[in-house]
Image (cartoon, rainbow, N blue to C red; front, side, top):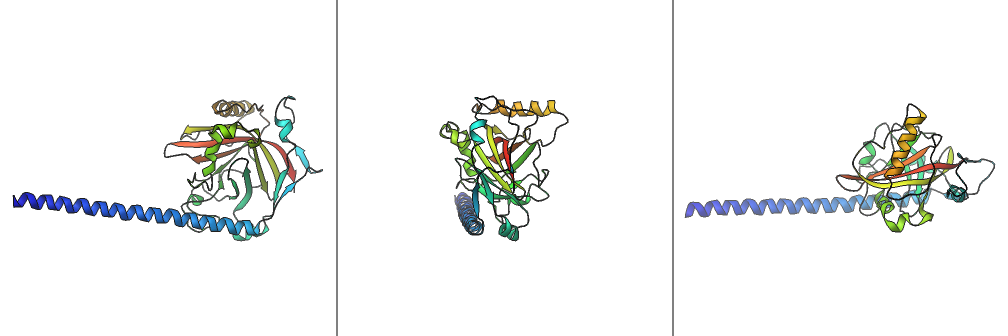
Length: 271
C-alpha cells in the first residue's frame, strides 16, 4: 500500500507541476499578446501624427486604366472616386523600407506597407523594426518597388484585435460584399496614387496558387485571372483582360485557411 501511495503521490505532483507550467505559459502568452498589441497601438499613433493624408481630385496627371468595360460595369462609377495622397517624408525616416500606403473600404486596413528582401522579417517586426510577433503589412519581396507587376501581393497577420489584416475577414461576410461602397482599394506610393476595384474575395485552404506574379503569356495570365474570379464567394461583376494589373491581399484566417482579396487597377495619378 505504501508503495502504491507513493506512486500516486508522485503522479499527482507531476500533474500539479504540469498544470502549473501550463498556467505560467498561458499567462505569459496572454501578457505577450497584450504587450504586442500595445506596441502596435503606440506605433500607429506615432505614424498617424507624422503622416498627412489628403484626398486628391482628378487632374491632368490622372489616367484611367483600361477603360474598356461595358457601360453597365461598375467600373464607370468607381473611377469617379477620389484618390489618396500620402506624405512619406517622415515615414521614410522611421523606416526606409516603406513602399506605400493601403486603404481598404469597409475594413480597418489603413496602413503604410514595407518591403525587404524576404517574406519573413516583417512577420515578426513592426514598422520601426522593433521585434513584435504582430508583424506589419509588407509587399512580396519579388514585386517591383516602384511599379506594379501583373500581380502585386501584400501580406499581414490576421490579428484577432482587427489590426494589420485582422479585419480582412470581413470581406467574406454578407454585410461587407453586399455593400457596393466597399469594393475599392486605395494605394499611394512615392511615385503615384492608385485606385483598385475589387473582383474576388474568398476563404481557402492554404495554397500558393494565387501568389504568382509573372506569366509567360497573355493566355496563362487570363487563365489565372479567371481562376481567381471564379473562386470568389461573390460575383462582383468585373470584366478582366490580359492588360489588367491586380493587387492581392492575403492573410491567415486560422492554422489551415487563408482569407484573400483581389482587386484590379482602374485609375492612377502621378504625384
